[in-house]
Amino acid sequence: MNTIHENVKNALTAGGAKYVIRDHDALSAAIESPSDFALALGIPQSQITKTLFLTEKSASPRRALLCCSSDARVDFKAASAALGYGRMEVASPEALNSSLGYPRNGVSPLGAPADIPVLLDEAVLNYPTVLVGGGATGIEIELSPKDLVQMTSATTGTFVKLPE
Image (cartoon, rainbow, N blue to C red; front, side):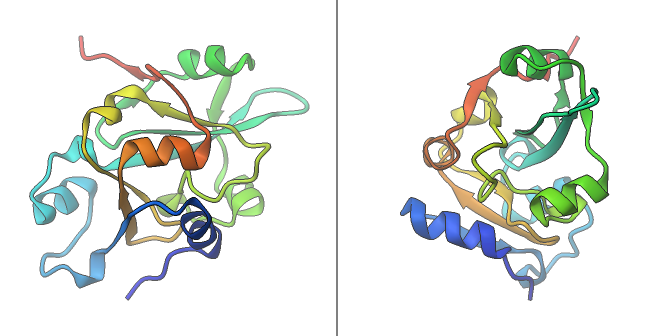
């Protein structure tokens, strides 16, 4: 069984929202990807999110988290513009671990320090619930996107590239 990160657990407790913990190991199917997870739960893959830890390309980089559907392509220019930051890229696994303590495949928008803003792509607001990383590999938190916005003080907008 997988366990959610302590920071995520604390954020969920403080937030008071309803949520369900979804452990990949508790499912009968092997989960190797977001599409496997969506199939096992019987939901669209776009209801499962990915959260990227972004860093500004500068001498004194500012950082942010961007949460969007797992099958979407991130629009880094839109994210930078929303934050008023310079050019951004995905931070290194070392920066992720030292700043948040999350593994690369378990990043959560929940439990981040107040100085790391959260961006949430507005497309996920269309679902009654979404699944976000639990701060550890193989575990997700299912909650309403409205609660996610409230608990993370997320800025919402279009942060993905639309299909051509």
